[in-house]
Amino acid sequence: MATMKSVLAARNKVDVVDVERPVPGPKDALVRVRACGICGTDTFFLHLGGMPTGADGSTRAIPLGHEPAGEVVEVGAEVTGLAVGNRVVVNPQAAPTGIIGCGGELGGMDEYLLVENAKVGTSVAVLPDDMPFDVAALNEPMAVARHAVNRSGARPTDKVVVFGAGPIGLGAAIWLKLRGVEHVTVVDIIPERLETALSVGADAVVDSAVEDLTGRLKELHGEAANALGQPRAGTDIYLDAAGAPAVFDSVIANAKWHARLVMVAVQKKGEVDLGGMLRSELTLIASQGYPTEIFEVTAELVEHRERFGKLISHRVPFAEVGRAFELALTPGAAEKVVVTFP
Image 1 (tube, rainbow, N blue to C red):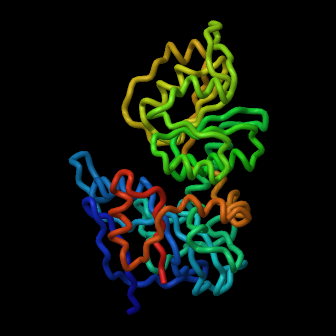
Image 2 (cartoon, rainbow, N blue to C red; image 1 turned 30 degrees about the vertical axis):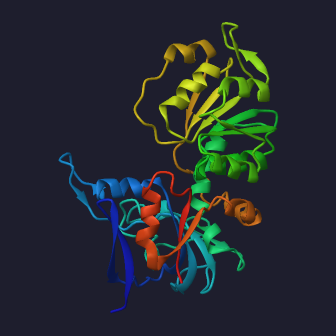
């Protein structure tokens, strides 16, 4: 019996265990994972010690990793459009046995990943032979960012503010600029993140820890008013990729008449000034996952690989996967960690 390494969620750490290597059926493909990103969902499972199973707080260990990129090593007899040696990214939500790395039976941080019912354009997408695996592993989070931008309805003439210069916020900034949006400002409190925002194409950045956000937005986007005629910044769209209660407060304090707020970050508990929203007729738009965007982003990710590659702060070999998750668990230690496989 052939075995492989699998990474399981434990309490504030990971366990690397030996499991049976999958054997693809006639409709499946087997992918040798070459890179897999770590995101906030992974650290959420580590804080809990696995997947919640009941109201008593009990959990079960699950394989981690939902941002895999790799190389096809076996193809079932009934699979079309795939060949051994193809570089691919995988849609974690297409697995019939549950979302890969998020409670399903499979994990993208395993050495080998079974692609069940392998179908190009649905469960898997093929990449050029020269596409770096580490950048390819950004496909899934960049689909999340793309969905938020799609939900915003941003037009070239819009002025947009992105709160949070993590991977999703920076990905959104890239998509906004590729969409032709006139002016994109990124707001964060970590100077190094803001430097990255400028390097990937943001028109301006604001360090809200030391700068007057309202003054800067009026300077950058001009002045407008809310429904009552009170002076406000001329920003058309706000995108929350930070998830801090202060973001909602800042948006409501600055929102002009008919401004829009796209919420893509997981929210912490906090109170919302509904009266303030009313005074601006502020539209709140929720953005969850990537209903159609998982492979919508792939061609542009390939085309702009150097630009997207700047989002990766740490590349950690699989032999040090424990350290990779320690980095991801430590606030401020890393922006985007990608585990690389031999």
